[in-house]
Length: 93
Image 1 (cartoon, rainbow, N blue to C red):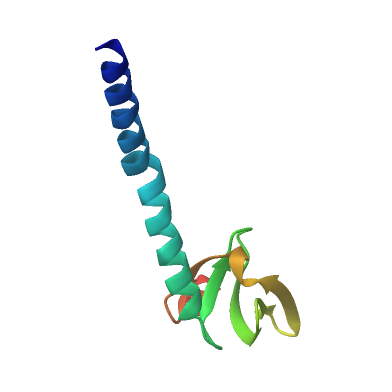
Image 2: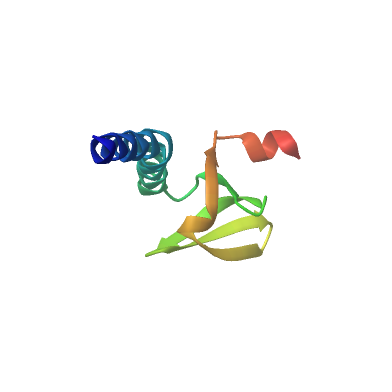
């Protein structure tokens, strides 16, 4: 009887960990992958470092963003935090 209650406890613990930790992380990863697959040239983005710019080129897992006139940074796609609505950069300046 003692072994059975221990197994039930560990079963509930694993279910708890799945619904609190694993499932939300998988959902967030799917959202990020969908965002990155919808990325196209001309989109305004913000990088994880806080850099805001317009996408100038996409080559595989890397993108080129223009942060100012003639200033282009190359970043990994995974460094993108979010895609901003069109016109956001113009409204900030």
